[in-house]
Amino acid sequence: MKVFEKLEPEGYRLHRSTCLGWVYFQQGEMEKTEACLQELHALEKNFIGYGLDLGTLYASMGDHDKAFYYLEKVIRNRFGDTMMIRTDIFLAPLKKDNRFIKLEELIGEVPPIDIDV
Image (cartoon, rainbow, N blue to C red; front, side):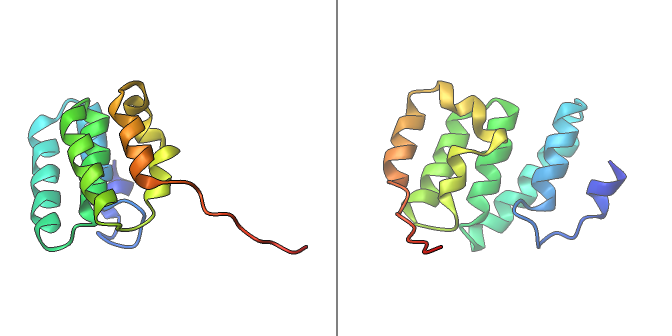
């Protein structure tokens, strides 16, 4: 836990509050989890990219409706590396939901890579 608390807020794929929120949720510390969510909501108002963090944390908490809402919002606004949604372990529970197919359709196909070796 101490390692997560010392992380810089920026500079990782997920915001520190997403990581802390996940740990707090796993430990049953709902007040601290809610505080992390509130921080992410405040950040998302000014920068849509935090929707990916919100979607990830909500998925980890089992709130699939909110997870899909934020993930779709990020995809529709073409922000960041939305391809990772397909492979992110924290989002794996969403794959059982039919709405995940819609997310994949919104993301689109993986563009071909031309590599000459």
